[in-house]
Each structure stands twice: as structure tokens, then as C-alpha cells.
Figure: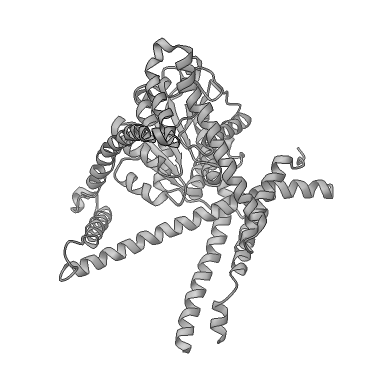
Length: 220
Length: 281
């Protein structure tokens, strides 16, 4: 199957990609245009998405299609509408009611979520066997030791209630080394992530736009 | 200004140009460097491999187009694997900026490649606002959160979603995530509903997920393009019929290796020059 000429979408995408790349040389109008288009399109997309995927199937259709069964949806609908009262100065105070429900719900969800799903299991995950027979050998035991020492020394580094003097000083110092290793790993992954973005755009420009264009122009 | 200082003042655009060439050449001429599979990726593959035909998993497209180069290959590999196993996939998205379209594109590609049927082998439930609220409600009732799929068909009429009432009927949740959504699947859905969770994350977010794997909260993690290439490799090794399909992450890892070499060379070069200029003073 031969390569197809790039369509209108490919031309627009290639133009915007190259406009963004042009920033690497210096800031310029083309880059600003691409940036503004991205911001505008993202916002418009989000509004359409929320209406089509959430508001219509979960609110409007059930509420106006079968009111007697779904009348309770009036409450979240009203809270959502009240949020926009902040644009009416005399009624702006009412928007706080909606915010109070929103904030209250998410505080409740987050509180249990963090405690049950993060703090307790993560703390349990650091309580590891330091006996080779229970850890499954000397190798795993050494791995456990690194985790335990890392957790304790980093916690000591972030313990600010007393000055880092005496035994706290070398312990906190070891904690800094663990943090350095962690930052290094994060930086390496960040580089990989950013290079992946470059690969994605270059693959598109080369394989979906430039190559078909060149092949069709050169006729082979 | 001595020669070492002059070299340290090199125009950054020369570095950009070298990185650009380092990325472009392997795309034009793939090298085919070997892929080594890590345990956190292998455990996800093994979990899917252990599923029975007819089992259902949730695949959450919690990312947008900018994360496509890293997460699209993961989605492709997982979907091909599930289709080969006869596992039903319920696709959804909780990420607003493009997640639903990522799902549509990946399912379309799966259908083209393997002949998988929409509504029978998979269903794309679409996007839902609310994040944690949607995750919690999914634990009670799937139709309450997704009354219909992305095409508007009522979820009760879709064979791929038959018998799936909530997480109790789901064998595994895989979130392909940017931002905090992958963490929420772990520390909310796994913690409160006990369903197995695996995450395919962008490379930037990957380090934090290893802590969840170590603590047993997630069954595995695929970190960035490297993780995607590992899953692609596992699928290709175990299912030769799928080995001929596109493996964009594996090709991408050639580029990663070359660009990383260039970056390492510049880091070493910069440090050596810095030390030399100090000695020359």
C-alpha cells in the first residue's frame, strides 16, 4: 500500500509542531500563535466534553427524561447553578454553599484515602525483616536494610524540632545522600519523559507528514 | 577568556541541534537495541496472562495527547494481549484533556489490527468528571457512573459490559496515567475495594509508583517509554502472531539510548571543563 498525501489535519499538526519547535531558536510570533491556539482549543474541548460525557448522560437526560425517579438530581443541579451566582454581586454569598459541599466532600474522601490508602500501607511497607532467614536470603535482607535505613535517615533529616547536632547530624547527612539518589532517579526519568515527547512529535513529522509528502513529490 | 571557558559558553542551540539529530537518525534508521524486561512490568503481564476468557478488566485512559508517545504503546500492547486472551476490556477515562479520544483511537487501532469488535470484545465507556467521586461510585454501581458508552448506547445493552455491576466483577484495573489519577486508583480503589491495580505511568511520574509496588498496593508499574517497550516485547515474545504489529516504544527506545548518550556526554564534558577552568585560574 502506497503512502497517502498528508491531509489537512496533518498539515495543521505539522505546522503547529514546527511552530513550537521554533521557540528553541528564539521566541517568535509563530510560537505565540501555536500557544494561544492550544489554550483556546483545550478550554473549548473541555467544555464540550463535560456537556456531552457528564452533564447530558448523568444529569439532563435522567432529570428531564424521568423526573419522578431521578428528582434527587435537582440538588446537585441547583448546587452547580448556585456556583455561578458569584457573578451576581448581591447573590455572590450563595456560591459559598456549593463550595462548602464540594470542599467538605473532598476533604472527607481525601482524609480516609490518604490514611487508609497511603500513610498506613506505606508505613507497613517499610517494616521489613532484617533477619536473612525471614527476609529470604542475604540479598533481600540487604535490600530491606537499605529501605529501613533510608526511611529513618530521611525522616531524621526532616525532623526540625531540634537542631541537627550530635548523632542527629551524621544521620541527617546520610538522609541527604538518599534524597540525592532519589532526585537523581527522578531527574533521569524526567529526561526520558521529555525525550519521549520529542520522539512523539518527530515520529509524527517524519512518518505522517514529511515522508508521504516527499514520496509523492519525488514519485517513488 | 581561555579555551575551556569558551567551550563552556557554547551556544545552547548547538546542543539542541545535536539532540535533534540524535533523535531523528534512529527514527529514519532504526537500530533495534535489545529490551530487558523488569519485574514490575512482568508481573502485570503475568496477571493478564493468568486471566480466563470472558474475564473483565478496566483500562482507564487517564492521559492526553501530550503523553501519547509514552502511554499509547502501553495501551496498544495491553489491548492486543487482552484480545488474544479473550479478556473483555471496559475502557474509560477520568482525565479531561483528551483521555476519551485516546481511548477511541486505541480501540479503533485494535479493531483494525486484530478485528476486535466494539461492544463485544471491548466497550469504551467514555469520560466522566469527578475523579475520586467517580472512582468511589464505580465501587457501588457501574451504570450509575456510566449509564451509556461513548456512542450513547445504554450500558445494560452492551454485551462486553454484561454482568459487570461494580469492582467485584472486575479482575484488574489498569490505569494509564498522567497526573495524580494513577495514585488515586491505588490509594482509593485498591485500598477501599481490594481490586488489583496496575499503573502505566509517564516517566516523570514513574518513581513514586515503585513505592506502591514495593508496599504491595499495586501489582506492577510500567514506567514511561521503557516500560511500554518491555510490555511490547513480552507480547511479541509470547504471541508471535502479534510480533509483526507496530512497536513504537521499542523503536523509541533506540532514540532514547542515543539521546541519553548525548546528554551524558555533555554532562561529563561540562563537568570536566568546569574543573579545568578552576585549575587554570
